[in-house]
Image 1: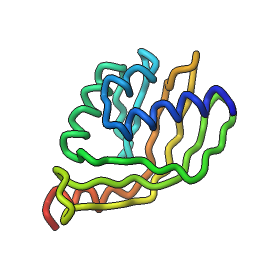
Image 2: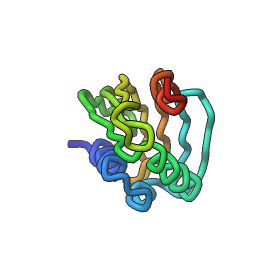
Image 3: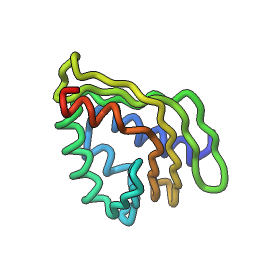
Image 4: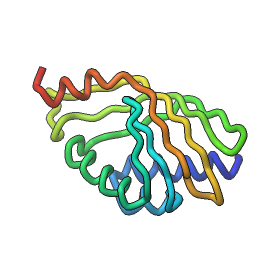
Length: 127
C-alpha cells in the first residue's frame, strides 16, 4: 500500500471518529480544503475548526470508501458520505462522494470534495 493511501486512510479514520484534533494531526500545516462548492479554506487550524463545526452539525457523519486510486502524490477516492442533522434520524442522508487528496511528507496537503450537497442542506432546513 502506498504512503499516500495510508495517509489518506488516516484522515478518513479520524473523520469517522469525528475527532477534529485527530484530523488536524493528519494534515500538513499549509493544507488546503476545497469544498463541493469550490470554496477554498487553508491551514491546519482553520480546517480543525471547520471539522469541529461540521461534526456539531452532523454528529454521526461518516465517509465510506469503495474505491481508491493512488497516483502522482495523491489518491482519488470514491464512495459515500452520510450523516444526519443534529443526529436526528428523520433528517438523515447518504450521498455519493469523490475526494481528491494530495499528500506531501506523509501528511495530507490538499483535500478536495466533489458531491451534490442538496440532501445535507435540505436536512438542515427540515425538508
